[in-house]
Image 1: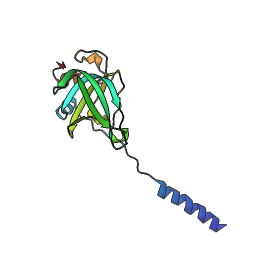
Image 2: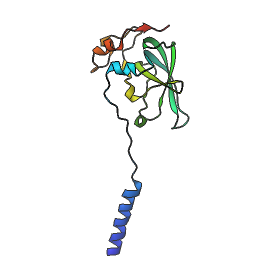
Image 3: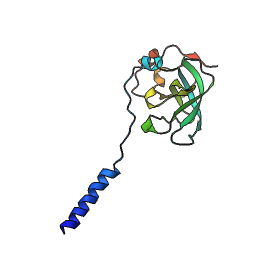
Image 4: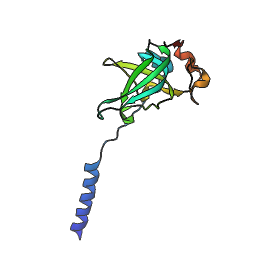
Length: 153
């Protein structure tokens, strides 16, 4: 009887020890908008128009945007941005047809963004952002911190 009990306990302990997998999660610091702009190569508003899935989990998804206004940098009308495939790796998902404020850095000659970049869905439209275009809870001072909007042509 004791042997059976010890065997069950040993199997249970082994299952706990050997089956545990570390959990990973994306953790973002609260960074002011001015700093997000300074750390980005390109900041723009635009509508997500396309998506190309990564060919493997170690690669990145590519999103295509039709940019309408720039707050930093000089984007073309069509902008391609890559992001990690998993949210645990700070990958971000954009919905086709929705308009976003996008903060993108440069890495390996490509524009890269993620959950911690400061991207935000905004109201549909094609004009410069107004406080009313921001999602609830976003400080209206964000507009001023972004700087002057330049139309993308």
